[in-house]
Image (tube, rainbow, N blue to C red; front, top):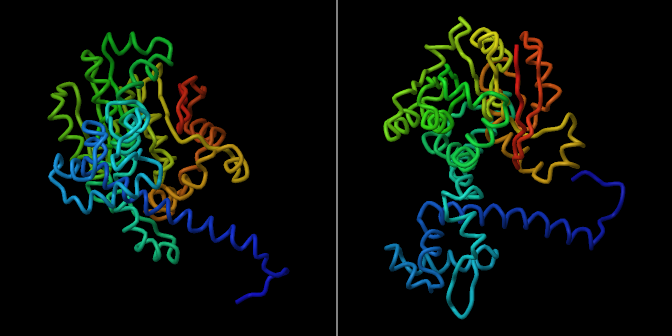
Length: 359
């Protein structure tokens, strides 16, 4: 082992070990949050609590012994309330963990966790070769997890807040315009917009087979007659300036060649069209990200597991990563493609920054 410049401080050694095992504790508990969401345990507690493990297991048709140990973990982690052998959720915990229709719902972000950790084994090779993995490496649950993670904002705020932030956009959508969602994932955003603005026509572009399959499934359920999905690898954005509105939500930083996509958007958008970008709030330096973003370590972790990996999944990929597309870099990239206006929108979001871009 290499020598250090000073001897080990026993107190700092204890603090370091506590911190490291605290991170392990979080990872293990996160796995149980995933199980609680997938098995309906949180929803069961919300509907039937306070209850004991026998009652909850009986209501959900699960093994009492397994439910009991899960409850013990959740209570010890202070996610679940415990009193006299009975367990329950606070109203706040119901909103975050059990109520998928609440704007604060967050359990959906754990959907990808098992496959993300499984893919970590493959990333050992990525550290040697530099080659990342596309989002399809995460399978159908990867697409489902992305959709569930961002669905609360889309369902509650996209139309009233997102559309409302751009002057005249609501009126244009109501009258009827052509809209493209580039990197549409499972189609949650444009299906929500298509429902709200039936006179407009919506086109989703995506390269993930699993996301496209989910998008078609979601379209079928929603009855979205004014929505079409396109495999961008074989049916790319047209170059005739037909789109009055283009959306790119949480995807530019994931792209291997975002500059190429931006150039395609420039050809696809109408001269008086508007491009709405949503991407992760980021700063120009690592020091700024750590100082100003309390979730910086989580974001850099997601970057290694998913975002940067996707952005390096093709030769000469940009590799921007989760925190790689700060406002100044984004503005430079869109200006290089021929856009002349770049404004930050006044939209309050815990993770994303929003921009309005025009020719």
